[in-house]
Image 1 (cartoon, rainbow over the protein chains, first blue to last red):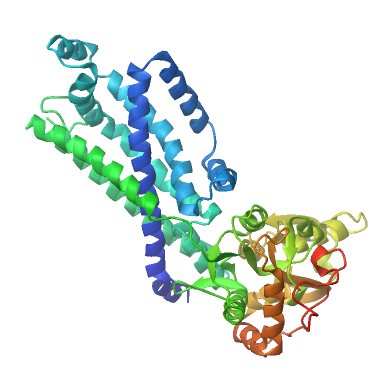
Image 2 (cartoon, one colour; image 1 turned 135 degrees about the vertical axis):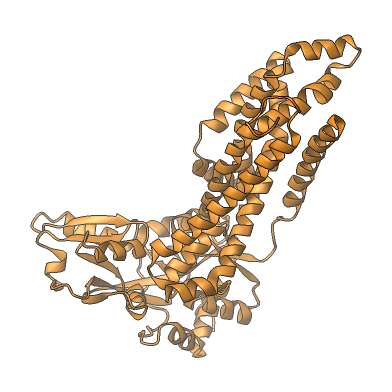
Length: 224
Length: 282
């Protein structure tokens, strides 16, 4: 009976997974754009900008995901009504921004300062040097640590059900309640689904890392 | 070669920007009334085959149809529903919602359409009876925050002559599974949920019934900001008088006893003071 139900409801588990993946893509994209901006600000910015990035990162790394979700849906939602999905993208995306900013700051700082000086000496503007010299190297080096962020955020999407986003975990609880039991079997299937998406994503990111590796540069073993 | 890789990096950056934008646009707020349900609460509301079903869902669809309302359902976990309604993030709450004093402070109830008693569930092979399941060292399970939980707390746990331990669970499925492996002795749950467990083949039986006459109703945000309370009350009465209500209930719970509508209306509820919105004009 469990298996019949699981087979019949599997398309809806997939639909839930698709919502989760959309949420993941949107929140990572938001975190990528803002995180990279914050990282550049925190390395090259005026002290006021640096202070802002520190405060932003402290706040968003210091609050649990689930509390952020509730704050964005109920708190901010009071002033500006947000759909559950959008509230989840903002809450988890801004938190991801804080973590991604740390990743990018580290990789930007790993590019030798002399390279910017050399670019400036050749007449490049400061922004030009960051865009053409620093970021292409820094972004490559951040792919490794970024896979960790991908994994963490994929799992965090499972919390969005608390504000009404019907993602994979919520679809699974529908099945559990329809059967009035079999929690273990249903969530084992869900665990396997998260695991597969996580592995596929990581494999893709590793492949990207190899493809983009600077020849002759030390990387994660495989590239040379 | 190197330039190509730079280009790829930048293309990735740009496409992620675009992706972010697309998702933002495609999830704007919609117009119809948003009815909050907990779609993990059969037979009142559940999801199957990608569709919301259940007594509350079908009844709400029928009311919406004959009152000309446009309603869309939004599923949220139980602990989020009342806060969402109190904060007007949803417009009405459609589920097996018990009428209580505390909820009366933050919500406006429609006329009650149901009354529930509580059942004492034990394992099918258990030798406990209605008395021993609720005393003498027994460990009892109930959903945290439920009316059953507060009843056990007030009447059994706080009575020093009765020696029981109360365990709270996030949902009844977990409580029943915990009883199955012997961690607790009994579970106290409302009649409709108890019957649902039994009809789905869980290995439990009813050891006894606690008569509560607990009314259940729909609810809107306090102060009825959308002005729909009267419409809902009228809709519930029409549904009942047309016989459609009986039909819906019996399609999900064939043996359920239909109570007269309006069911018991406790006098502490603001919206049950005369004149009741939507009733008695004719």
